[in-house]
Image (cartoon, rainbow, N blue to C red; front, side):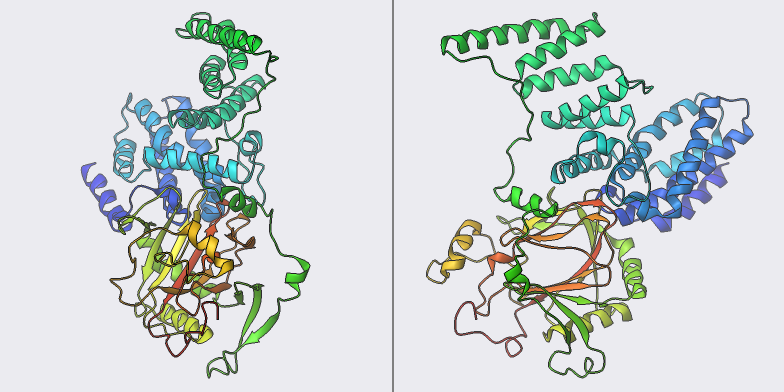
Length: 552
């Protein structure tokens, strides 16, 4: 038995040695967990076959998960593209399988436990489960989804129908509560009670949900409703340890408020409508509206300025015979899309190269200049050297041919895969410089001032100047969400597999174009893969000469 366990450990080592926590930040890496779970189910079924007399509940568990993993492994990225599936996978492997282990440990099951013990070191952590849960809450806010729609799996473009159980809804509410997020606690405890009232079997009781709900409603400032809910809790569970004392406390507070209102001549308040706390960036509303497809400022007049054409970059030798299809996405700042830039084979090769080295994407701290992880950027990324594979070399050369810019001073090709609700909130690609009101134009002055931060030169060590331009390749279609949006001027650009978009981050003077502040919207359904090339100033002196004014 020891030899068998050692063999499994060695067999898995090469494949998973670089695996780490934060699975939820990359759908691509989460697909490995699908096969890990399938292997565990297989091992579990072998155990059941050898121990037919053991608990029938274990066999029922295995059969249910066997059917589930058959569906998930047939299309791992499509399956995990549904955020509910991704969350439930995190929850199963972090919580439910450990419960099963405790059950099995009551019996003799050396083979299964040995396999489970080996695999468990590569399981998701509490951070993964909580991260996936918070991603669902983020999607709920951004796309204005009601709790029932998420619970029933009614999302646009889904391939694998899935629903949340009472336990799942309760856990989402509990995670929000532990994070001090009473708004989402209320939404998910209400959904928990609704599904219990509809007759769904569960180990969770109505009293448990009411306990969290009543206190969260109180924290949201609705004393009247908190009193009513606490009365329901007392009726459901008269022995509840806190319910009666909470009820007295809430009623005393409500009487004090009523007396104060009467003294001020005010009538009793109406039922409160719970709203999301206003603790977000000023531009949050514009950003999320664009993600939903609202507020896009593509007027008829602007549309008339946009054209399609064949692009050969002034008769570049490699583009004369095979020019690229170029389409204007926006007029000012000028953003263009190129079609058929990457083939399916090239995309798969780039994904194959990057997947083993994907690591949590970082951002540069504006105060220290140090790279760090941030909740507003949920993805994993990898960097590919130009000479490590012919495909990478070919793609980089193609970008240089199309843009006419020098690639020697550009950054490595960065590949990114977004996780559950993966996003990158509004940011600049270029490094901001000290604000000089004398240099700013009237159209750019206010934006420059509002967005200015005294941050260190992020690219000083590279010696290649600022990020002049961004070339962004879309390597997957995204059924819902995942758009690239520009809140400043109201543009939304949607991923199309094999296409790429290009824009300049700097004016010809070298000053930053603050209109290019952009964001990657949360992925609602699907797995979003992109790769990008950041092109720097140095080497472009004769390829994009300076203009006479800032905006030339």
